[in-house]
Length: 239
Image (cartoon, rainbow, N blue to C red; front, side):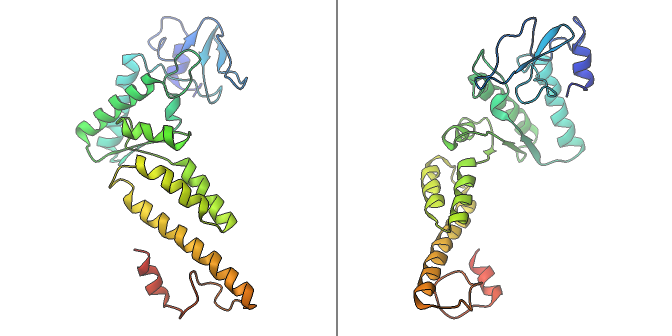
């Protein structure tokens, strides 16, 4: 935040936090979409990719990394959290006009994750990498993060639900499956595959009823026509 004491102190050249943020004496460039990423303050320009109100820390500065490690230890040791969600994880360290997914970003996250796991091996380091699954999965494959969100799969799931056609979610699962670690996402995949199959069953059931002129007395049931099972049995079948 531009209101954080670190940033306010960094506005004074030569201060303790002078090099804690990505700054320049001139405004170098805009984003590829034309949005400004350099903003003026105190006679200099600071880099803020997402919002003018959120200046980017200089993660090339070892003092910044050490302080963030200290913050992480506080939350793990003193507050007992189970891990961290890192938003905009692909934007941590830019390299000129390459503003995302840089080798330095992968390397910094590898180091941070390693130091977290050194004392807390079960802690989760989850990253929001808003990108195609083929890119976001690399953060897990390279050991930079424990997990990332699969936005392609989420979009496909919504498409299948809205269209009542499982094709999108099945295709997304088949495309993503080779990149997922066995054991990390196996349970989730099993549940989503079941949802996809049930969507297909639901579609076939509705088509069959339409052909028969069935008013749909059992419209709350998912699956092919047959005896209604108790709700408890339905729930157990999902496990």
